[in-house]
Image (cartoon, rainbow, N blue to C red; front, side, top):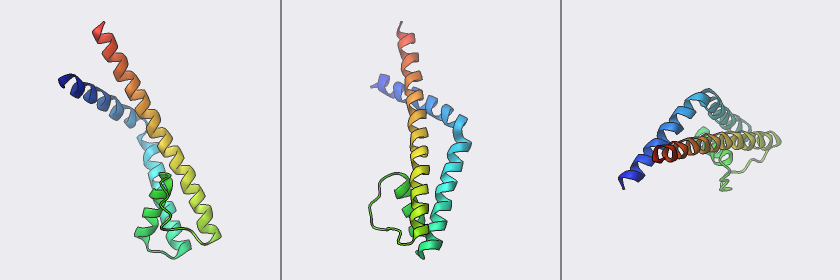
Amino acid sequence: MRNRVSAIKDFAGHFVRYLMFVREVLVGLLLLLLLGGFLVSHFEGIPLAQAIYFAFITGLSIGYGDITPKTGLGCAVSVAIGAIGMVLTGMTVAVATRALADATSERIHHKS
């Protein structure tokens, strides 16, 4: 059990360290998602909270379908939100993959 906790701590340490390298990009992408929410609220005439919820659900490729754009501009913004979400998800996965690879490599080298 202690070994597993140690492995999780190693991974988390690497993950946070690599997140710090790309934090500006990640924050920028999150701000773009928020901007998309504001635009959807404006173009679709829905409350801001619902539009931001829509932006994050769309950006994370969940897409429940409870809120759908009706206007052309709303649809265009939704496509942009989806693209931004793919980049955000891809970067997060890339950071996690690198952190896992480094943590695993360190553990293998320490056992040798």
